[in-house]
Length: 246
Length: 214
Image (cartoon, rainbow over all chains, first blue to last red):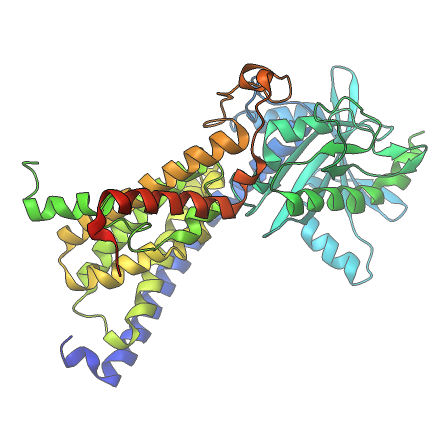
């Protein structure tokens, strides 16, 4: 290294210059791409909701959403109502799918009433009630959408995660895991029980749909526990609404 | 290799075996443990590192004469972090599906010590073209080990390769499972990656005793 680059003044000036250049570059990239990223996120939410109620382009083993150019139309076609539940009050809101579950959870923690979005879909004459859920995995957030019938029997699910371990916890978004939930009852003898991701249910083919359990993923215990916990704590909040449907 | 001089070609071939970043330099072990439970994740990570290390090495090499030596590590860190974040943002805007697959790897790439290691050991003292070759070579060396480890962990741990059930179905008891074979769930846990890497190191050093250090 030459003497020039060793001086304190040079070092400080270089540091300042570098911070300014990199900062400006990142800020420029982030703000110029923001609208496109937001639009993608919106589409993704619609795709996820439709996926949970079985509107997707899956083949035997893949997880394939309805294509991005069709999703807007299909969402309008299949989702009949978007409800917002606030305490005892239920209202319709066509933008309910944009409600940020994370923010609402924070509100509930402060003791305020939280808005609970619920999407009512209809496919082949059958009604689906789809609720978003959100919780913690091993490394970061996990979330999903659960489609139920009016008796809170699961009709389909979609899970996603921010940073679970590839090959282990990240497998919660694979078919072999998500498909196990279909048909499982969230209730047990008239009481809400949830669905636990269990390592010891001795039912790997998941034939017993009334045990409130699905088979866990090997090597992903904490992520699996996170899935059980978010199903339990989030869907419990919807129980009073489902009671009014009977 | 007519395209490269002998010396340049060595930059690519050395890290594949006798100067492998994982087994000899012992860099990048953390990601080799973390994401090799599946072959597919290993391959995705390898390609990502190939890209970041190739480009990053060139950027650092171009800046090598103006980087103040006292803060060079921080400068390197900023370069690689900025590079990765910009790529991530661009993918999110134009290839959202792809970015979802890669987002898990973003944090792992920034903290991958192979990248910082090569910046520090090579790019700071060599020209852009040679630095580029060194980056590609080391990323390929990294990829070889990752793919070997991923291959064995997925095959023995889940009985699949790239998601295909090559050994039969463990639940339906077909293929190998019909005669009593079981998956070894232990292979899915990180410690087994270390053992697989250890076996590779053992095999490599017993074949080339010059690599053994006292």
